[in-house]
Length: 425
Image 1 (cartoon, rainbow, N blue to C red):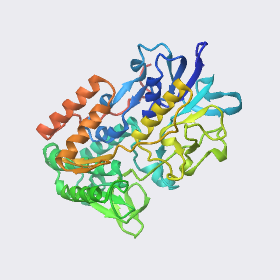
Image 2: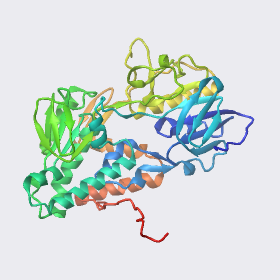
Image 3: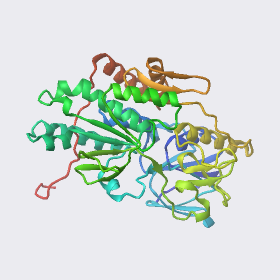
Image 4: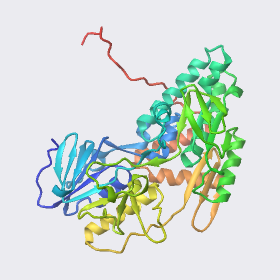
């Protein structure tokens, strides 16, 4: 059981310790509420840098922070590691894999998952980057395939091992493609001298007519230019329709031999047991009012990727990015503290993406940047956004070392241990 002690204060149960969940819990520390923060992991994960873990640029611990450490000095916040199974709206209770819990207020901040648009084969055989576990799995596979490639004599078989296809031209796809291209340029010639790096092809497939479609036209053009400078093969107005584990098939019939497809083409939200059909919007996002309360509910709130705040100027909902989640969490914290407030209004602070060393694009409300200045700004924003002084310091040191040496020392294949049946227990 979850074993939550009784309290004289109202209980706020927060599901999810992403940007929204941990921000809300922080804002409610030492307030007159009992806050229960529930997540399937015991740590917060900094999602924008998953791709750097996958490319051996950062250790997982550098972009993670233990939840219990974050709230060590906070008496009113309780941490439980569990998975939400269903919601009993009429009873004000939730069911988890560790038991049930009563709530006075429920906050859903679960986030989104990868959207494969109904293609089950791609879902089963491609890689995604929605957790540190997936990032480590991808890192292991990339390094393992490079190890196999230096022993493979057949050219076609070797291409399957070393060529990589990334699907999706948003920030994740662009940043990942740039990072892999830099590995090809700076790391592979030193680590794999037997391998002809000119054989390594990196494909970035985008269904639309430009990269970074959520950013400005100038940012898209600059990103495309930087990718081409790094040797990435950019395929616009094309879609991946199939992947059998050895080759990718495009909608125009073209095929690419590869064992690795990284899917970064979209996100969706999982449906929750106990949520009514009329409470869902597009992509399974939950419809909330201007105070982030789930429609047709009395005490359920939704934050971040999972929420869709509809108004006359924003029928599709806000972007599913960290800044929206953080601002919504701050708004809801003020609402809980004061009981009333102005309707939620998202303030767009801008967007950014890095394509590699000294190459980035930044769209701010008042001006736009690209190149080295944008890259430095990207570094500063991401370091400041990390939780924990040690994490900020470690990431800064890693980035400085990588920049000065054109190298990183984290290229270690870590395979899960499994005890054989013949081993003594």
